[in-house]
Length: 261
Image (cartoon, rainbow, N blue to C red; front, top):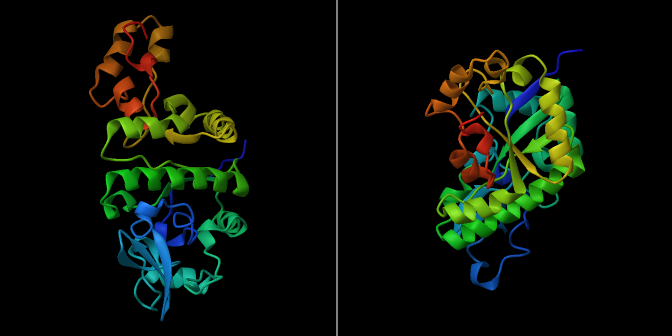
């Protein structure tokens, strides 16, 4: 089987999102506070919480206009054809399906995991608006993945960060895919196939991260009768538990904390 290169840390920053994503549906009470785009002398600007945050289709989470020499890798991207055009009608590469796929091909990537809308929960002060904005983005990005390629594009949901109940409710549209050491290291196609099935079914797929590798499921120990070694794995306070997973996705991963793994 040929090796595949998968990016586990790609992004869609707020600056690249459709200008009317929130404003077209915002309730009257949030019309001025919800993320919206206004045309200024130098192009389109994002306003969040009624504050000018910077350019639409700008550079990254800073909403910055392009200036040669500001960042070396940004200049390299510019030389390869990446444009930061903040005028009406422009097509941001990260949120235009055919352009995003073309960039994956150019980078030699088979698939990607996408983190989205960095800082949006920090930019919005009202908790109710924050929850609504998160839901609106999650619905959009799930559709974006389907329009791009659900076998290659795997976005992560944004979860409200002030109300655990709202976070759990929003997480019902998400699943946590537990990729253990074996599937993460030796047969990663198993994990990719599972992710494709879940994404096709309309879920936003999260994975359990461990610095430097993957968590062991303990099955090898159990198959050898080493039950205590398997139990010791999940006794680690850093091991994913049903509580930590349900906070993200609303799922009860009871198998991870059972007395009889």
